[in-house]
Image (cartoon, rainbow, N blue to C red; front, side):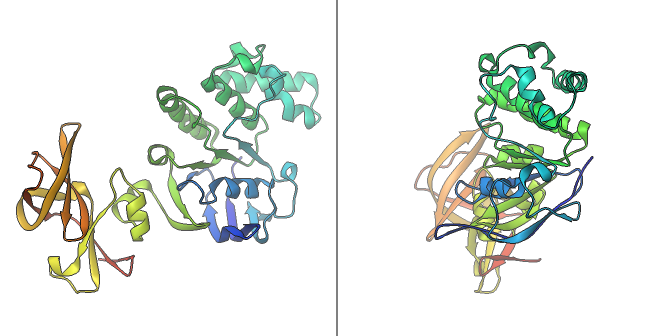
Length: 327
């Protein structure tokens, strides 16, 4: 069972702070949608409002066309996996997974069957009799997912569920999440500040800024065609470079935006002063200045600090007043 999620003018205010500002968003059936943004942009508040923990000041929430804005969490047919997993420490793995089924009034045999089935699919059936406090971070994450999946809800909300795992476990867990989402054919709405997670998990990414969706698209779309200078600065290992339009023969009011990877150093009509450089995976990244502009350029060689390096731009976007101009 999958569901479409639609948010219309969703607004959330805490005290004097506007956390969600007339936010509009549509997520498709069976989509793995990642909400990406820096800390403090309203990502977790958005999930808590969708699931019903927080009530919006205004706006509407639709699940499969049904207005659920005024419904309590247990009537929305949505499961949420929290950052800290929110497991019951006094319970076993089995009891934690079974809890929502018990609350729904299922009989013991049905509960056992469903818990065993879902635990088997997530490779945690051998841990069912253990207390959850004895599990590793990766195992606790699987338990939290099992508890969410066992209800077979319309969709899942995941609030940075991998952030408490170490790097190696996080990579494995990320691959498992994607596999689980495809296997169960469910709608996943996943919050993170980690761009590698967005890049590797998402069908589409929504970049959140100051309570609004700044841009939606594949991660590749966001990287290659950021709609605003803010997205261009936020997305990518290095911020997008910007130079004045006249340097490329364009109007004074325009700016040229290009990635470090889109240049060829050592030749070309443009020049910058080298400030520093570093070697990353057999490629040099040169930190340079062109007037008052800070640039990062990919290079096959390491130029001397203080020297002038020439370069040409092979690919670029055009921006006007901070927004992209379609080429």
